[in-house]
Every structure is written in structure tokens, then in C-alpha cells.
Image 1: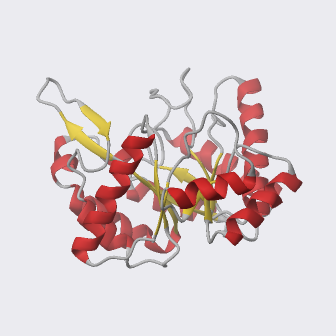
Image 2: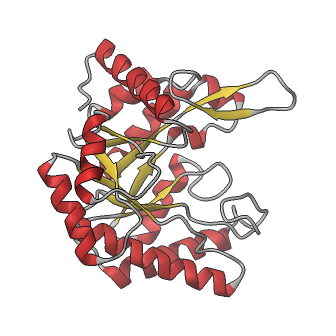
Length: 277
């Protein structure tokens, strides 16, 4: 598999500087910068190719399910542009969440987990994919605890309902851990994810999770190595997929934190005999 992460930098890096920054950190996978200019995207593609750097993801973070029609339409246009950028760059996937019917774009709402919203997700994803008709990349949804897909089973249902070759899976197992049962049994959860979704997985996020002793239940994202995610299981399952599978770090506050996270993941991989580039 290929390890990657964000490049924290005070200014915008040119393509060569961007590729060099990944090499300096030991990364072989990258997030495509937030660009839409076709010529500039090609410059980043060339720099990545020369540095043996895989473009893993293009983020389309927005709310294409918004109850506000103007916000919804703007988000759908944004997703189409980002999927076009992913196709042009040859990225493994374009990733977004399904969206929320509530005021917060990534928040919970009583309408999120309903049959009507499931149908709206199907129609919306089809519209995005059918507009772009990608041949090299895939549109994916990150699983979330309070919106579809909120489980392995609901992701399988979406794959079947959307029925598009270019719809695939983005896996972030931490986002599925929403109870003490799943927290302590996350190794089995991870195995279940790969058993059912493995052929569809295009990219993964690397985080960790911890549960406090406060009532009621408090689960918090944390740096890999500081929580209870079964990284041996996660990396073992990833190692069964193709050698270019990206594992992307995210949501840390400093380069030092990213170095510690990458070191932890490489250490676990070495212990269990899984290769990480």
C-alpha cells in the first residue's frame, strides 16, 4: 500500500515543490491540491509521475443533499467539477460525504436516515457520475455515523441501487465506530468491511479513536497510535488489496503529528509483515 497525507505549508507549492515535499516526508500517495485549471492539473500529474507519487484522492467536500435548493445545486456543480478533476488527473477517486438534510453540511438530522433520503442520494450520485462519465476514476462516499452510508450493509445497498461502474468505496473505519460494542469490536468490523467491500475500495483514511469514561458515550478522533483502532487488522486487510492502495493521513494539526502518525503505521506494518511505501 501507499502512505500519504496533507502537506502543511504556509504558501502554495508549485508542482515540483509539492512532489518534493511528499518525498521528504516519505509519502508515496497524495491528495490533489484544490485546483480546477486543466493545464495546472497536468503539471501536477507530470510532477507526481516523475516522483512515483500516486494521486489518491480529489476532495469534493460539500452538501449535495442540502434542503436549501441553491446550496444543493451549487454543491452538485462542485462535485461534478471535482470528479472532472479526478478524471483528468487519474486520481484513484473523488470523495465526498453523501450530505445532510440538516443545517450543518456534515451533521446529523432526523431526515438523514430515511428511505426518501436514500433515494435522493441514489439520484444525486447518478446525476454526478452520468454528467462526467469517468473512465479512469471513481466517485465515492465516505461512511458517516449519522448519514448513509452508515454501515457496510447500507453501502452495499447503495452500490446496488446506484448501479454505476464508476461508483466505488472510500473506507474510513473510524467513522463507523459509534458505540462501545463497535469500539471494542472494531477488528471484526474492519474485517467485515473488507470482506464485503474490498473489491470496490479505492482509497482509505488513517485515523484513530478513543472513548472516554464520561457519561454518556464520548468517542473522539485521535492520532493513529493513541487510540484503540486495530491497526494490525486494518493494515493486514489493506495488504491483501492491490499494492497501490492509498492510506491517507488526515485531520492532524502539525507536521510533527503527521510524522508520529506515519511512524506508528510503518511500525505496525513492519511488525506484521505488510509492505508500506
